Image 1 (spheres, rainbow, N blue to C red):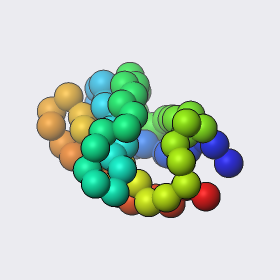
Image 2 (cartoon, rainbow, N blue to C red):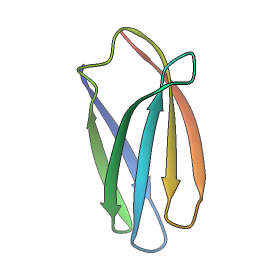
Image 3 (spheres, rainbow, N blue to C red):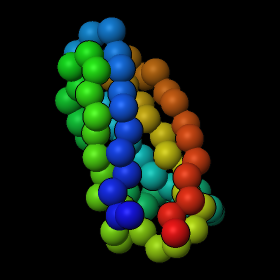
Image 4 (cartoon, helix red, strand yellow):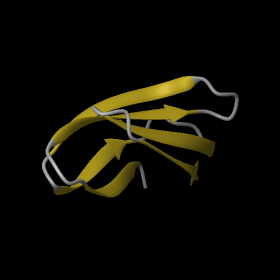
Length: 72
């Protein structure tokens, strides 16, 4: 699939940035979302080539979460 879906739960409404990096650490996609408590966000990953990617989510108060995923 070309859509990356994530369930995000937060305590208060905030804006988050989702940055996707390739294997060499280059930012290949940046998205921004306004989140109110619990929400599913979708990112179009159709332009990404097959391979390993790293995803970083950063909130307004600089809370960070990092994950990796494989695009087939």
